[in-house]
Length: 240
Length: 252
View 1 (cartoon, chains in turn yellow, red):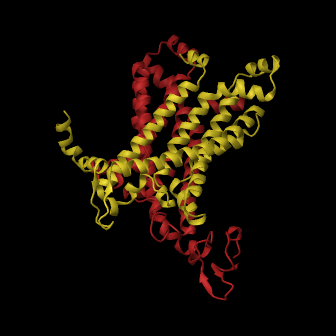
View 2: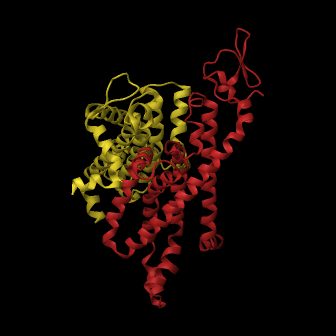
View 3: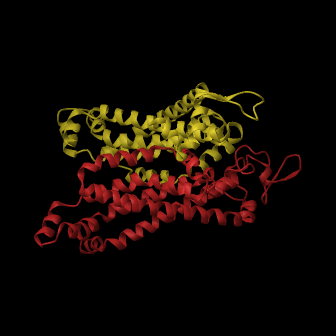
């Protein structure tokens, strides 16, 4: 089936892209230096993984404690939910270009910009998740002598995990997607293939799109697996 | 005009005048010659007309994409509501489309549909599927069993129950999904410039503008305002579409 599938006119445009991924190609503008090939693909993919994970970590470090705290206190609902809504409206391209123009290029400004995109969904979903925890469970925790911090860590956090993970997955989709245009901030991710048609050619552009899509899906699957592992057994039973 | 924003400029030596920055050397440079100057009001006023077409293009991209996405997602949700076995595969399938970065999606379509508006619309509407599908499904799932029982007791058929009871009660959640989908699509449609589909991204991703904060802020600002306008419009529609909620509010 494979040979027939790849020669089908609908997929013919992809053959060059697959060649670009697996073997080095000549480029007209790099002065004889070859481009593409699995090594360069993996190198750029790794950069994209690094900046995405870094930005996600920064966003989590900021948003998770804030969401837990405000959810526990039951305060700042308007702010937490409004921030989530406002965050969706931020045009990624404008944010990245703005950071490049005003702050400069490099991994630090990029991580900052990506973290800005990741904070709203995590904060909002953490807040909502904690608020949805049955107040009786929280009362029971206090009743058996847990401190406020223990209540947050041992009762509210585990019960809020499904909602938190929804936020983390939303944040990741946006961060990984925006890391694709990171070359605008001087960080060479897989997006460099996509944005650099004059260097890599059309095959390179399509190859970049294929690899970026695969990378994003790997993130999605990894987080779906993580969500299953982090959700406590009792909650999993309830969902069924 | 001395503005608040101009006062926020980062690290510019000199004072801010009428759209110009006066260097200490006495030389007067146009505002846009200073990459570190945050916002040039003069340039913005003189060049605002350039943003008309891109704004319209972006508006069209969003409207068409969300409309296409809604029709497909709504149909999928109705099918899954009827055939429960399909619920999970459809959720997973739309989830995959949702996770693919839009820039990659645009160019994945390159060998098939080339570049242009259609390509951008396909990718943008694919992105909205999951959000709308999910909200329609949860809206239908949250309809109280008692309401359906009452309808059944009045002799309504399954089809009548769906259209006259379940869907109207699910309207707030369905519109909630449309709001999220539309606001996100406005932001992402800025990236349609990479599909050569126009939009506000054209005013950001160009040689001259990529280092010019005023152009970026203007384009980004218009996109945010557009998202806000859509959001408000949907809130209004939601109120109109759920008269029983208003009745309950006045009764309470």
